[in-house]
Length: 231
Image (cartoon, rainbow, N blue to C red; front, side):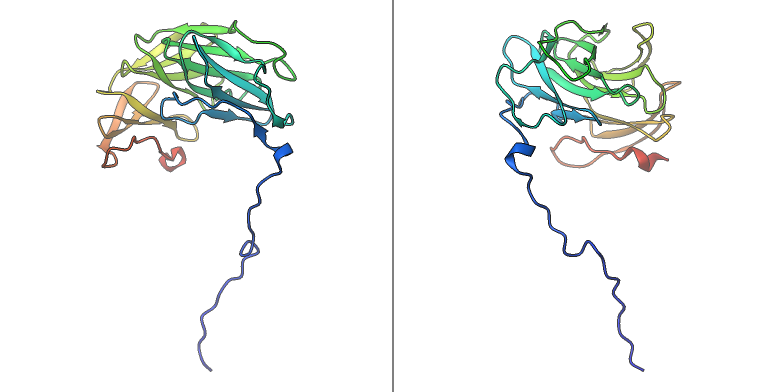
């Protein structure tokens, strides 16, 4: 009896992707070029948010997912920031709440109306000021509602309690600009990468640095880290 290698067949073996038709895409959106080496968009089960080019401040679009097709130039925007918007993140617990941060040193929380925007939104539900320089990153705590993290060009991470609108903790262990911030699944540990090419594992509750390691070599920003690998 001759031995033959066994191959496991896959039902995905001959599956090919196909681009959606134009009417099922989002078209005509002036995407920003000023994000902090981040994704320029954020999506949840109801809305797509996209940071856009703007003059005299920062703005982003919020579009219901079912509203595909060409987006008109005068489509309503979230435009309360005084500087370029650098990051946006949807609240994982409340689908119509989104956080944004900007070159104007502020973090803002926005409540999007049911069905999306009908006119420009300029008044935020909450404005958070605590950084001394522009804010490049925002990240929601994965398991605790109303807890938001922000990282600024002042090399600091602030932990905000949105119920009182104030920072409850400052993590000041970085020596350069923070490029990425990520959590493990229960939020008990936080990992950051920094322009100093170091990767840090931090306990958010105490602010204690548990581990420091060498990041990736090279000149490209270190903005990728798998939070689930921390478990």
